[in-house]
Amino acid sequence: YLGDSDFSEVPAQRLTDPAYIAQRAAQINPDARSPTEQVRPGLESHQTTHFSIIDAEGNAVSNTYTLNWDFGSGVVVKGAGFLLNDEMDDFSAKPGVANAFGVVGNDANAIAPGKRMLSSMSPSIVTRDGKVSLVLGTPGGSRIFTSIFQVLNNVYDFHLPLDKAVAAQRVHHQLLPKDTLFYDAYAPLTGEVAQQLQRMGYVLKDQGWLMGDIQAIQVNGRTVQTASDPRGRGVGLVVRP
Image 1 (cartoon, rainbow, N blue to C red):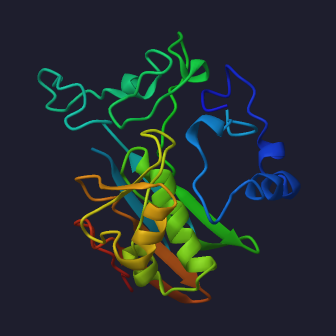
Image 2 (image 1 turned 180 degrees about the horizontal axis):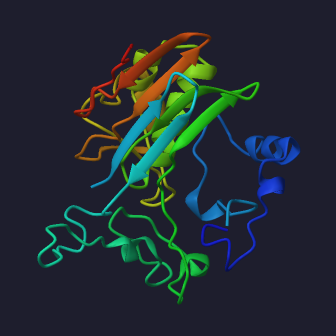
């Protein structure tokens, strides 16, 4: 279902149904890798900059915008001084052929007139009881999904402080290349965990560039905390009147 919802049905309610999530989770073998050829899509959903902002009234913005690849299309608008993007690469130009980030698409994301390409950009706002709890987002191409998920996992499941949740080690897997787990040089995947994964049949690979640049804000009552990813150059500030 990974594609423009105006062109194909994306069953969002069924995708987020707890029973379906439990069913999919039950298919994960914690002791061995899943053979790539046996993975089926089942029921799944049909250089970038990010900033996160929240004001004193609780109004929040999570904004991710992009040219897609470095320098976008490489075309500068004459007399205006800005680059045009190459977001067409986010379409599946041909089923089974990878894009610039190594993602292999399908017909749901094929090019068509008036159609939106699939994007990994995931600016996120988490609320609790109707109030903003967490604002976050990141660049990173196909690594955006996994970067944001792992920070959320660190905050809400492992109860890490925000700065440690953002700085923690990340890994990425996108089905293809087959059985490959990517990590970055900031937090290499080593030690006993790496050995266990290799025994399960995974190939561990330094992806050669840093995995994301999370910019996050956490709100606890009247306390606001920021965290900028040490992998990047962002800065988090709390401005008081």
